[in-house]
Length: 273
Picture 1 (cartoon, rainbow, N blue to C red):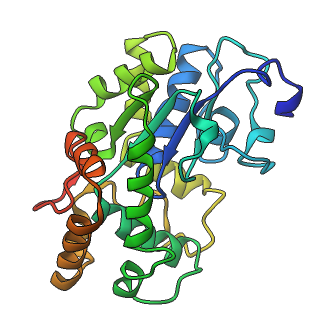
Picture 2 (picture 1 turned 60 degrees about the vertical axis):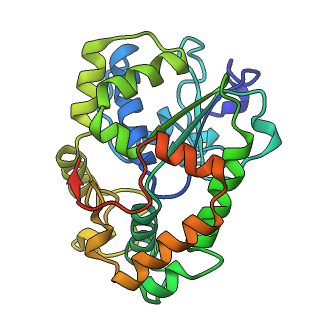
Picture 3 (picture 1 turned 180 degrees about the vertical axis):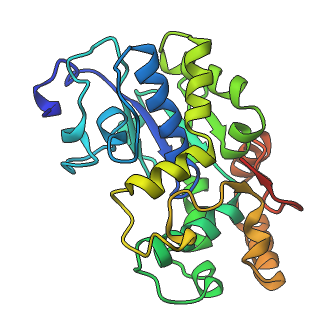
């Protein structure tokens, strides 16, 4: 369905913004399953149909607005996903800002670019220190967004909150988006988006973005599903570098938002979704 020809073309979507590898696919999977249950769409959600329910912004025919299939349902809110930096066009829109502990983001992003996409061929230590893709870019992203968030139009949530308090966190998000509250539908969506089920779906049906060897778990979208697992991948020197750079370069507003959302720059243990 061509979005430009739908009844929603004049409406303002809800923006789902996140830095790459902050848990957007997990949240998108939850939202897609909640939508199918609440609005009786009779659809089994997998990694191929996600974008027909919760598309990216832009014109990509498979992942962007042209892939959206609910344009003739004005009762269903349109949620547009982006990894972009803050832009003035977001001022008048509701924004969901999804964040995650910087160290976990960086390790997951490295694995995605190296193993899933096959486009980065250097060490993780070099990746962290890369100004184009590493910690510096993440810090710039966090600083920029944290300065422009309107508390009346923004819902901030974290990967860590989704893991530790899924029902309360997601209930508040659903109400913010403007969808009807349906407790059984949310329970279904949370279970359908559990790590084991998502991993089984990806292993069986694949995913449109994976270019690497799917037999390598590091190449999968469902890579680990843990909080604090960066300890398994980073040297002590790398961890100290992340901590020192974040302390020195993150602005107070960004540090505060990370802390309030439960995103510790450095954690002590790993826990599984």
